[in-house]
Amino acid sequence: MFYRKGIRGNSLPPMTLCLTFDDGPGRTWDEGDPDPREEESRKIGPGPHTLLIAEYLKNQGIRATFFFLGRHAAQYPDILVKVKESGHLIGNHTFGHPHLPDLLARKGAPYEELLTTDAIIKPWVDGRITFFRSPYSDWTPELYMALNNTLALSMNHIGPIDWDIDGTDWLSWQNWCITHDPDAPKKCADNYLKAIRKAGNRGIILMHDSIGDRENTREGNQTFQMLQILIPRLKQMHYHFVRLDEIPVIVSRMNDPFRFALKASNSKYIYLQDGGGGKIMVDSPQVGPGELLGIEDLGFDKAALRAPNGRFFSPGNGGGDAVLADAADVHEGETLDLVTFDQTHVAFRTAMGNWLTWTRTADGDQLVASAFPFGPPEEGVFAVEVRECRQPVTRELLMFMQDLVERIGSWRNRNKARE
View 1 (cartoon, rainbow, N blue to C red):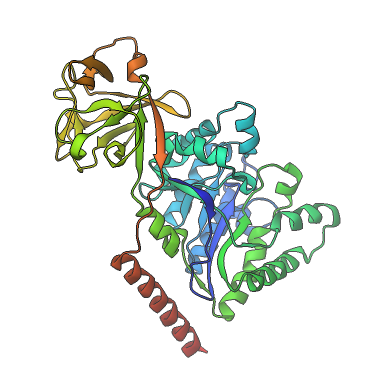
View 2 (cartoon, rainbow, N blue to C red; view 1 turned 60 degrees about the horizontal axis):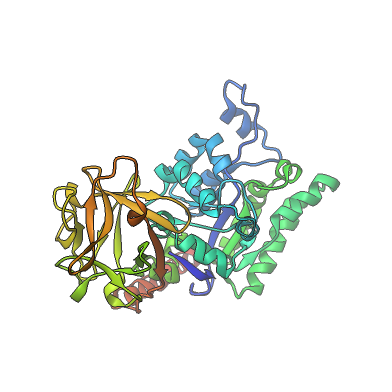
C-alpha cells in the first residue's frame, strides 16, 4: 500500500541507522576485460561500484537497502543476484528516474514506471513486499491516489520510503568532477556525520551507489570510498545498523491490512451482504465494511479475491454461474488473472478463461463469470478504490520493538567489552 506521507525512520532507537542507496546498480570497468572483478579490486577509481559496496557492507555485518532503477537493473542482472545473496534488500526506484508528479500532470502513466521495474527486479526481491522510493522524494496527493488505485502495485508495495539523513553525496561527486579534490570522500563522510547528529543520531540514511540523472556526476561517484571512511567511524561511536524491514514503523506497515473496493460500470460497488458466503451483488451506492475486499497476491499477475469474512471468491468451475464468496482456500477455481487496463481499472479472468462481470437479475445486479472471447466487456472492468487501514499496535509488534532494543543493547555491550 502507498501512504499519504513518506515513511521515515524516526521510530528507531537512539544510535540506530538504516543505510539506503539510490539509482543503482552500477559498475565501473571495461566490459571487455577478461577478469573484470580482479581488475576492479586492483584499481578502484571513481564511478559506480554497487557490488563492491554490497560486499563491503556484508563483511561489516551491515544489511542495507538498494533502490534500483529499472533501466540500470536491466543492464546488470548479475549484480542483483550478488546484492540479494549478500543479505541486502532490493527496492523499486522507477525505471527512468522521472519527476512522477510532472509525469502524471502530463497525462503520463507513473504506474508503468513501477510495473516495468518490478518485472526486472522481482526475482531478487526478498519476500512478497517491494519497497518503493520516489525519485527526488516527489509525492503529491494525486500521485498517492493514482498509484494506490493501481491494484497490481498497491497490493504488494510499501512506500514511499523517505529518509531522515542526507549528506548530499551526489553533490560531493558533482563538485569532485570540477575540482578533483583527493579529500572528497573524507569531506563527504564528515557531511554525513554532521547530518546524523542533526537528525538525533537515528534514522534512514540516503546515499547513492550510482546517479540516475547526471552522467558526469555518475562518473565521479566515490560512495564506496566514502563508506570505507564513514563506517569504521560510526562503529567506533557505537552506532548500530538495521535493515529497512527491521524499522518498527515499517514492520507495522507490513502488517497493515490491505483493503479496497471495486466499482462497476453501473457506478455501484461490489457488495457482500453479512461479509460474504452467498451471492455477490454489485448494487451498493457507497463504500462500507461490506464493500472492502482483500486480495492474495499469487505472483505472475495472478490473484485471489478475499471477502470481508475471510473467504475467497469462487466462480464455480471457472464460469457461467454466480460467483460466491465461500471458498476456505485458494485452488485453481479461485485463482484469477489480474488484468490491468490503466492506473485505476482492472479485470479478472477465471482459470476457464471467463471474465468476472455483473449482470442484471430479479434480485439485483449480481457478479457472475461470463464467457467473452475477445476480452472483458464494459461490465467486466472495475475501478479500484484503495482504503488506508492501519493495523493497531499489537502485542507482537511491541515484543518485536522490545527485542530490537535488547539486541542493540547487547551489540553495544559486546563492542564496549572488546575495548
